[in-house]
Length: 453
Ligand code: PMP
Image (cartoon, rainbow, N blue to C red; front, side, top):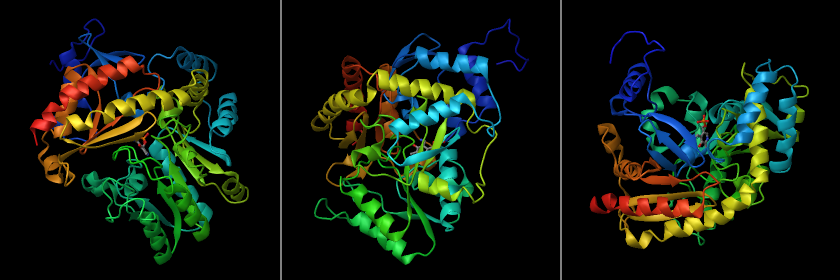
């Protein structure tokens, strides 16, 4: 690789693109020396293509965000049209794009959520939620749960209960965040069994509120994403809503990953008919064509700020180029009936994945909802011992799930592997035949995990 400045007459080789990337950029959430990025040059529908022309079926919608698939003509047109018309204006002005999107949100968000603050990421939307909750209640503490992910900035990482956050803590120590046990009926952290437990994890959370002063809000991912697609039992959310109401604590639903049809409803809370006080989302809101996050509140919270100072904002909040494509993306979801599709085709996907379990001793559990699934790998099905330990990560070795994912890439399928599980969340437009291809590849690749037992 030459250090000479690039000239347009000298196109870079793939090797140069990769080497310059590693030299000049940080690879996130990793040891830098373990970063060996693929050079991706194109994407269409459920596929993306590398510089050698090899196509990959995208079985996790990138980071569970490319819900509409790539190269959707309506969304691309909306970006171009908005760029021509009004690329940027500061957020204190009114724009057509913001009103159009806000009115459309009233159609699809849970009833009662009526006031919107637009950001450029899920992380920022959670930061806004914490500040709004603290300003509105005059209280400080936020109860989150273990095995959660809420973002990577100071407060959102402090609210994150991901077991890998030991690596993040030097930058992520935050004040006022407490953790309740996660809801995980496969491996209950408080050693109960559903349904005899009577949802004791929610009682534990109430016990925390009772024994702490100054609790402003509880934040939960209605279906936990990064930490393994943990779907709560049907009683959990209504019970949590009732506890929050009774204790005067706000309920924040982090639907960054679980929103926008991923679970077979517009939002995961819709499965249980629960209305949060604050709903946070991002990712699928634009199907990842442009970066947009949303912190949405009830009218009651909004009313408070009529005569209290709303002390929050960004230069790029409600950026018109992020809003216009969101309108197009949501209308495309409606036109293509993607919520029902996620339900129907997602059920097919779930059956195919569940059929893998009897064939592979390394599979601990297959679980999910709609087009949102996880396969958790274990060393021992009886003891449910995960493959990866903290020590594996310290050594920076490729973990077993990483090895399986690498084998799948060789077979032309991309899948997200984290901790000791895969998150399977394809674009909502995926066809059953494509699911068959991807599940076949997974079936073959899992031999690596079976052998490692
Ligand atoms: N909350 C949840 C539930 C998420 O899954 C994520 C991202 N994976 C975030 C927040 C942070 O969103 P972003 O990466 O857009 O900042």
